Amino acid sequence: MASRLEQFGDRLLGRAVKTAIRLLRRTNPDKVSDLCGAAARRIGPWFPAHRIGRANLRAAFPEKDDAWIEATLRDAWENLGRVAGEYVHMARIWDFDPEHPNTGRILTDDIGMFEALRDDGKPALIFAAHLGNWELPAIAAAAHGLPSAIVYRMPNNKAVAKEIIRIRAPLMGRLIRTRAQAALEMAGALQAGEHLGMLVDQHFSRGVDVTFFGRRCKANPAIARLARSVDCPVVGVRVVRLPEHRFRILASGPYALPRDAAGEVDVPAATQMITTIIEGWIREHPGQWLWFHRRWR
Image (tube, rainbow, N blue to C red; front, side):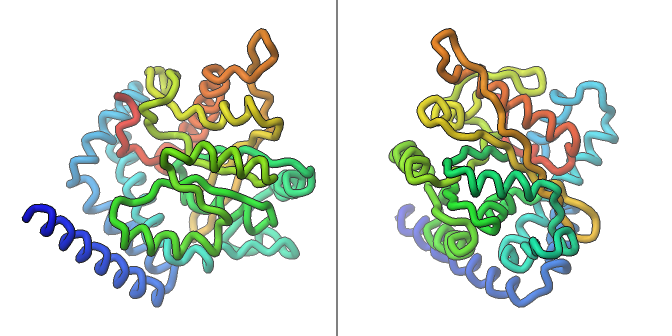
């Protein structure tokens, strides 16, 4: 009986999400971003995740007072709401024109790096974090002509997952779902000369120990492990949300990863290096990171 109720609930949720996506597609992307951001800013603090965010921020910024903590959390809720509202409008939001750069929503001074990655004849490893609108780096790679593959986590609800794939697939290149065979798929993408991107700023139970904001935690070592076996550039890409519904795409690297005595990439040290880089990004714009995840466990 419980299983049937669960299946019924999943179907209802799937239909609700599908209907919501169809309705949101008919709206103006700026208006829906404003609406969802305002709603999340007001409603978010009532959710249990707000307590997780508060504890995380207090641990990461012990020198800040309660007013700063709460204001930053409301900014983070607003950013999350805007990401949700913008999701169905990704194709419209990405309006970067190489012939007329920085005249639309998307700003970047790193066209040269994207072009170099595209033209060097090598695959690449690209790490990102849940900052600004974190879906945009994947679109940036495809838009600049980089053969790309994106690692993503499949939602538990099959109907919701189907809708998300329908939105992502035309914009983001190959999609690699996190599962047992994902490591083989990622290695295969690099062997095929693709540019493999992934978000690496959340807890990873099978990860390596790193220090993040002065606290020990587990981090995903996939970038470092792949770099150990494949000779290719490793770069970081992030998005900073700007006023008036604009975004700045920032690329950094290629990075020279730490190596061990045998000259191989040192996986723990390289993972720590990437974690430290991401920490620096978050310190620049703390209100644009996803603080509501249990990063330290």
